Image 1 (spheres, rainbow, N blue to C red):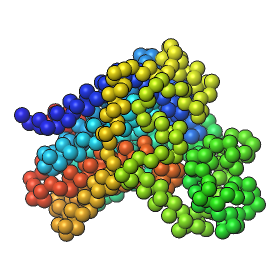
Image 2: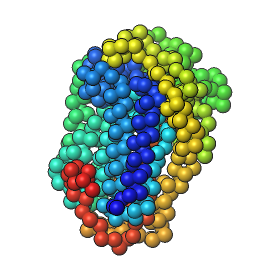
Image 3: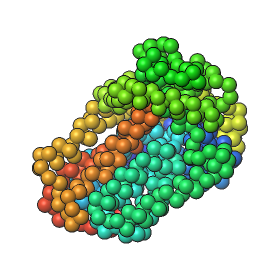
Image 4: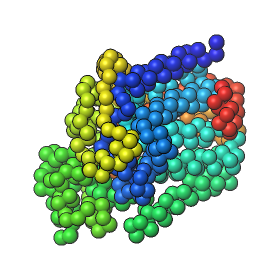
Length: 465
């Protein structure tokens, strides 16, 4: 039987997701969920989060069931596993490597739990993974370029971290000498983002797709910013924290916490004057203390590569990533009355999570043992460059000396590095990078002289394998 080991892993992934849906009905909640549901019924750009995930939820609003949303997200998680396997095998990666590359996304308990949360990360992961797999095609056409561009645009309007990833895809196609294809991809990726930016400008009279970039970067710099070194002008001194960095709270508290100097400024923290003020402070901190900034980013990045899983940034947020033993209370942060009202309207009934045994208990026990340690993820990321150094050259293709593992590897690195650089580390930000890192490793260990089949450019062929 072809692909019997992958079929077994995929079947196990299906069973685990069914158990999750039986054990936690209809979904698990996150603080951001309220914002997304408000946007479903009041379509307008949000100052903090783009509306992509809300539009995704809108597609399923006629069902009036959050269980449908989580069911689709679980299907997306399975689909990413299929995409990784197909991409690896079509690039002639060994069967064992292709199967192992799918294990984290299909069987990691934290990945399954993330799919059951009403947050944007699973949708974002699926969109990026699909774009990467299409980009690995040997004979890209303008249709492929349009599809990749639209996927990247959708990802960028789901999570803004998708925007810098567009550059990686552009460079990838330029390295392969596909100049016209690159232009088509760039137009397809940028046009929807510009259109959304026009909607955002019409709503707030501000340029951008969100209005919180300065605020989040300010929070990032507060892990090291020292006003004695920065010597900020008088209008920025209001944002200084006199406490030494070692005694300060996690970065997120400077966005939402009542003791934050930014939050104490009258008015909404995300209005343009306040966001601009925060952005100026952050820029000054980075330019005056570049080494401290680099060290802070590396420290945050390193949290994703530890063997254990220490509580971070606080117990409340950390707890959302664990399967609960009892009915969880409503999320404490951002639980505005309007959000609750809109969520109830979406479900057309009471909202909350029903914990059903023994299924919930099975998933809690599974989560205690089934996860990808951060140290293993680091080892996976080191496989492609290590293999290239060992062979001393990239695999030559008709497109030149551009090894196929380069695009999933660089996208995965980008997904890991950008959040700690502009906001903060969060465990859920790591998971979308895992399948891409595993795909890159599988591509790197394939035989260099393999007769690699053409990917083709249409999704039906990929699904049929």
